[in-house]
Length: 170
Image (cartoon, rainbow, N blue to C red; front, side, top):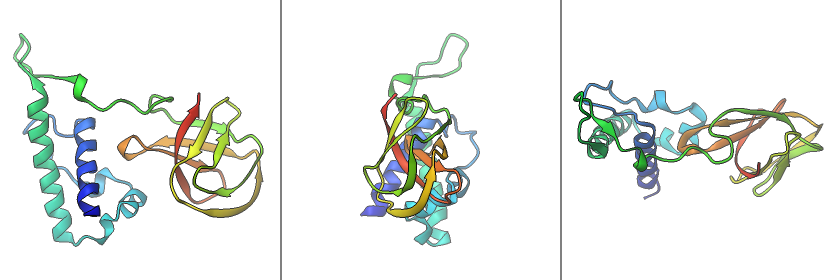
């Protein structure tokens, strides 16, 4: 059941990013669409090659059907118009851009619910369950990037892992 819900979320992502614009779109390739870390986090690394191929085919077919259903009647020049009111919104607070700043204070590790105040005035909160202690880093550089499903990932310079965060204060 967990895999099924992950597949459904993945399919929704594909629809919101417009992977399938027409029947002429190249075939969808899951391994190219996801980072290795996201692939592992979603548990898709436990599928066999045949299951992954079947999933790729299903997502591509599903995305094409949904993209066709979202199209409005053709414009006067004959090109289909996409109904943007049904597309997913951009991540809140940063419009999808990469944020690079310095953490105010010391970084000592990850914990669900931990808040990170940045020198640009933003406050981000960790929303995943990663729990790691780290030796103290004073005012380290942090980078927040976009990922799958409008997720935002915070990484700290000198630390190998990143965590999923949400913007608390702009």
